[in-house]
Each structure stands twice: as C-alpha cells, then as structure tokens.
Length: 493
Image (cartoon, rainbow, N blue to C red):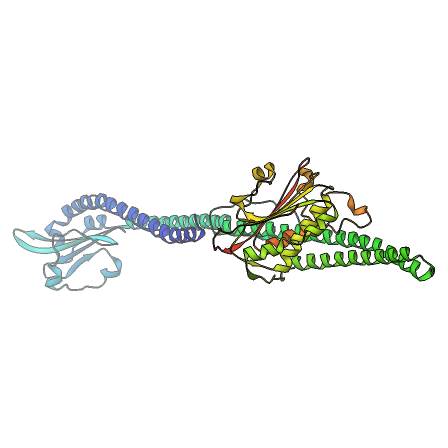
C-alpha cells in the first residue's frame, strides 16, 4: 500500500473510530435508559398506587388536623403536597416549602390531572379528591429518581472512561503503526546512509511497495552506482599508475639508446660512413617510436575525457572507404604478405576521417605484426548480409554485429580465449613483445580503436582461432542509405 494512501486511511481511522465509538456508547446508554425507564415506570406506578390509596381519604383535607399516615409515607424520595379545593396548600412534606403557603391558581391546580409524568429528577402525579361527589381537595405526589440518576451518572462516567480508553487505544495503535511504518524505517534508512557515507558495510533492508520502499530502492541503486564509480575510479587510477610506470619504462629504453648512439656520434670522429648512417637511422627510428607512444598516450587521454567531443562530418561511403583502405600494399609487400582488399558499401556516414584512419592503421599494424611471412591479410568494408567468402568460418558463427562493417582479418597464430577477453584493455598485449626493444608499440592501440569506434556510435568485436588467425570487426553507423547497387572490389596479390 502506498504511504499516501496509508496515511489518509490512518487519519480516517483516527477521526471516524472515536466518533463511531461515541455513537455506539451513546446508543448503548440510550438503550439502557429506555429499558430502565420502562422498568422504573412500573415500579414507581406501583408505589404511587399505594400512596394514592391513603391520600384519597377526604378527612386529610380538613384544615388544622394532624396527618400521621401521610407523614409515614413521606421521606427523602417521596414528596407529598395536599391542597384544599381552592388551591391552598394544607400539607407539604418538603421542609423548604412547608413554611410558605402558596395559593395555587385554578389553571395550575387543574393542569395535568391524572397524568403520571416524569422528568430527569422525579415522577409527578396530581389527582382531585371527592367526598360524596363534592371536591374536597387535591394531592400531588413527587417520586424522586435518585437510583436512576445515580445509574445515569455512573454509566455516564463509565461511558466517558470507555471512550477515553478506546480513543487512547486507537491513538496508541496508530502511533505504533506510524512509528513502524514511517519513523523506524526512516531512521534505519538514515543510519544506512550515514554508514555508507562513512564507508561502513551496509546490509540491504527489505523494501516495501510504497514511497519509503521506493526511496530505499533508489538509495540502493544510487549506492551501487557510487560503488561502481568508486571501483571504476580506483581501477582507472591503478591503470593510470601502471600506464605511467609502463610508458616511463618504454620511453626509458629508446631514450637510453638515443643517448648512447648520440654520444657515439659526438665522441667518435672517425666512424665509417656506413656506421654513421646506421647510428643516425637508429636515433631517428627511436625518436619516431617515442613520438608514436606520446601520440597514443595523448589520444587515449583525450578519449577518456568526458568533455571530449569528436567532430564528425558527412561523407559518401563508397568514395571515402575506397580511400581509407588504400595504400597498405607497400607495408605488406615489405614483409612478403599478401593483402586482399574489398569495398562494397554505399550510403552517407558521419565520421571523423582522421580518427578512422588511425583505427585502420592500428588494426593493420597489429595484423602485419602478427602475420608470418608469405601469410595473408584481408581488409574489407562490407555489409553484414554480404560477407566476403574469405571470412573464417568461426567468424560467421560467432559474429554478433550487423550493418556496415570494417573487417581486418589475418592468418597465422591466433589468440587464446583467456587473452581475447582483455585485448581492448589499455597496455595489454597478447604476446611478450614488450621486451623486444620497443618493437611492439605502446599497448594502447586496440583500446584507442575501441573508443574511437564507440565515439562514432559503433561497436568492436575481435574473434580468433589459435590455428587459423584473428579477425577484428568494427560496426559502422550509417545515417542515410543511397542503395547498394555499386560494388568496388580491389584485390592485390
């Protein structure tokens, strides 16, 4: 139940139940009064008949006589007044009125004769007395309702006590429910928040289907996100520390070589022309390698920044990708590798040409490095529903990407599945080539490739078989199709 609904229901209960209880108690008292009135009426009527039998004696209405029988009937609960036929009081058992003679008017005297009436305090009855058909007087009897009044008073106090008890029970019950439903849960949630802020271990509470439950679930979700962010920051910090240490080590090696060969050039004046050119070439190569490492580090740092936005421009796919896949033949020719290039794509794409060239360079560089002499490399930009025939069978079975694809595939020794899960991590290299005098690169190429493709709205997948080779597939984001009728195949052997 939602908290708002529960609170409204609680308010309704607090307001309605006391009123219902008061009404029930009132009805109970009223029913008691009705039953008691009937019983009391007959009791007082019976008592009145006994008194009336005495008061109907005509001799009692003669002036100046004693009335011992009337005095015996009079008591604290029974008041008797005798009137002469002209309304003059002859006897009054009430001592406060007995000393005062009040002549009753005929209207008052003759009013309510023979009517047994009751009010809150007493029953009253008035009747004329005749002697030989001659009116001699009147008597009036008042029977006190002390017992009924005491019962009413006692029951009223009982009702008040019961009402207070019921109201207290309702109030305490609602207070306990509110404390259980609101205060206790909010206190527990606040303790958990404070514990989490202090980085203490927090155990999850059971969440209910209400606003506090939603707040608790949101806190747990926020906590998970913060913990993931903390872990990510800690991981990035470790990666940065490792990266700095690794790149410092990688820069130290070529820098030492540059220094050594530069000192040789400066101290040995009579070097042969061949050695001089060799030393000079080594210094240039090492400097280029260091420049390449620093470029990769700068690009990786930029791609990691959340504020970095890659500028994209619209290009026509057929023309752009023809240009992108060209000019890799000389690199393969130097290592006696056969390169096959295929471009079958059309449409309008949003790309950053320079960065896509970096992606292709990185992938081709890795492919050339891991392809043996007289091996094969395949490079293509095609649609997923028109894959080239040379794609390895395991690639078509395991490939998870569709749409326009950039494919770089090389034969030779593949990568283990355990290592394949980490190839896009920074500074990870699937071989031990890092120790080969800086020939393997920085280890940031594949990580940079993945981030550039993702900045283009695409995805990257690497598939490998230990005895067949490796295939890298990059999904490209096409924004406008213009047909697939043209085909441009480039094959170089």
